[in-house]
Structures are given as structure tokens and as C-alpha cells.
Image (cartoon, rainbow, N blue to C red):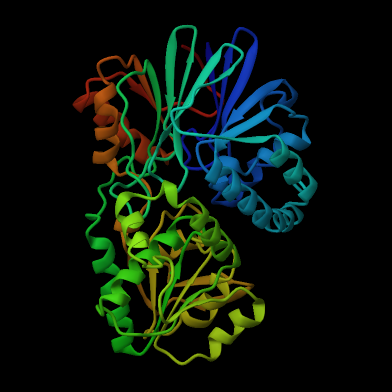
Length: 448
């Protein structure tokens, strides 16, 4: 069995792994690389394999850095099957449709043809089938099983068995315990493991800090008479925020101010959430059973149309705006940032990973000004980071997830992290778990 790292090696995004056995080929994830312009440019390169020869693609979760090149794969000849959990399939379709126009504009800036068109999304969705956790699926010599990764609703880590060997692909692992979703599962039977390392060298704030950080940010913004801006990924992070805000507002822990969810995609995804309450954790299901609409509360406004979004400008401060994109890389958050970043009364609360090269990363790293829509905007507002909101496991959680597998593991491949984070996790895996570990390079092929 051969494993090739076609993406997600020494970078956080663009997960794409090729497995070959007995002449058959499958992929785990087929993601878009996000961040700086060099990385984005790589999305336009040909695949390092023939898409027409791929039997099936198994998707860990819906985020674009794990699904975003599927329509390109279809355009280039793939006609096999795509498998994921049911929520992932529905979420991914919405995310792919939303990103299509952004990618088309990006292609024009690179002087290239679009990565794909809407018809390619329609084509790949027709090949897509939903699977349940712990259901075994066979494709050629491969037997595939999904387990709950606890990262976003419907996320999975995947175990592939072939030639008597078991290979685990972590996808993205959750920062458990998490709001709404169930905790990450553990397994103890694997020969090889690919593990993400987004926060491979870091330790998050305690999950108890989620509400505290949010409560303090709201209180401080209200005291200053300002605007609280939160760039948030439409998938999972926005729903987590709504859930936490629901508790804070209903308990009277924060002042009542207008809270705007200014993201059409997040609004659509929230409706899908409500279809899959059986994937929620026990606490969330009990709240729903007791009559609490956990994704809505007084003072929450969903601004779907452009006109509704523009009207936020005329609402008096204090107020709070949650909008995409989560890295300030596009979307409606930019319209708010160009208006509010320069005022010291306002606050930008960063609650998610900021890829190297993204505008969010530059602000987080202390940039005094940023360019938005061709205009140089001074950053005078208060900037805070709340790592407790991260949907990614930190170093201790990653090691804890590996621990039950260590008796059988022959090798650990550290993927989906910037080089410093991957190397930090590699060192810990070697020193604390006494396992052989390596950080593969893009294009590396290994025999298992």
C-alpha cells in the first residue's frame, strides 16, 4: 500500500491524501489551499494524479480546505463516488456554491481560467453518498470506517484497512468539550496515523473561558460605546457563538445590545444544523427538549440580504456584528472592518485560526494598518484573541487522542500544520509517546 501526500503537508490547508493498493486508488479529502497568494496559486496546478483513475473520495468534514477542490476533480475527469456523513454532504454543497464566485474572481486576478463552475459542483454532488459513523464501506481492497472527530457537526476521522494494515486519517480533531457537538471519539487499533497539527505546539485557554472571553468583550465594548466585530467562519464557529450568546443573554450575564449575524451562508448553514439535532451532544439535546431554541434569542438579527447588511451601519452603538470570512479574507466582515477598525472605541475579537498571509493574521500579529478594497485602513481598535473558541484540538488533546493507539502504531505522520507547529508536535510524539514520527513534505510517497 502506497500513501502520497498531495496536500496538507507543512501547511494547514489543502488536505489531500492518495492511497494505492492492488492497482486501486482512493483519496482522503480534496481540499483547497488557503492563505497567502502563493498558496492560493497552487490550487491552479494540475492534480499529481489522474482524477479519472480515482475510485472514491472519502471526506472528513465540510470545510473548504478539505472539500474545495472536489469540483475541480470532477471537471478533470473524476466519476467515482464521494462519501461522507450526511451533514457533511449538505454543508459541503452550500460551502462549495458560496466559494465559487470568490474563486472565480481570484482566478481572474491570477490571470487564469476559473478552477471550476457551478455545473461541476452539481456534478460532484450527484456522486456524493452519506454514511453513518461506524458503518464499514468497501471500495476495491479498501475497507473504510468513519468515527466522530468532534470538530464540526458531522466531522469524522477515517480508518482505512487494506493488506492487513490500518491507516487512520485524523481530518481535523475537535477542541473537546465543544458546544453543541459530541466529543471526539478515541480508538486503539491502527498501524499508521496521519494527525493534524494546526495547534501542534500550542495550548488553548480552558474551554470554560469561551463564555468568559465573550462576556468580557461585550461588556468592555458596551462600556466604551463601541462596536464589537467578530470575523467568524460560517460553518460551526458562528453556530457556536450563537449557542454561547444564547446562554449569556438568557442568563442576563451581558447587556442587551443588537447582535447581527451578517452572513447569508452562516444563516443557511444554521438551518441545516436544525435538521441534524440527532448529531448534537446530550446537553444541547436536553435544552431543545426543554423548549429552548438554542440557536436563537431576543436581540439576535439574521441579516440575509444586502440591504439588511447595509442597514447595520445605521444602528447606533453599542452593537455586535458577526460576519464572514473567519480570516478577514473576503465576505461581509471586510465592509465592517473598513468602517470600524480605525476607532479605538471598537473591538475586533478573533476566535479562529488565522492562516499565514491572511489579513486576520496580519492584524493579530500587530499590523498598524491594512489595505481593504484598495484603501489603507489604520488599525486603532482593540484587538483580542480568544483561543478557547478554536474548533481544533491543541497539543495536549492531540497527544491524548494518539495515546490509546500507541501500543500498535508503527509510525505517525504529522500533517495539516505550519512547519513550526508540526515540528513541535513531532518532538512531543517522539519524546512523550515514544513513537516514530515524521513531518512529510508535499509530494512525498511512502510504502506502508
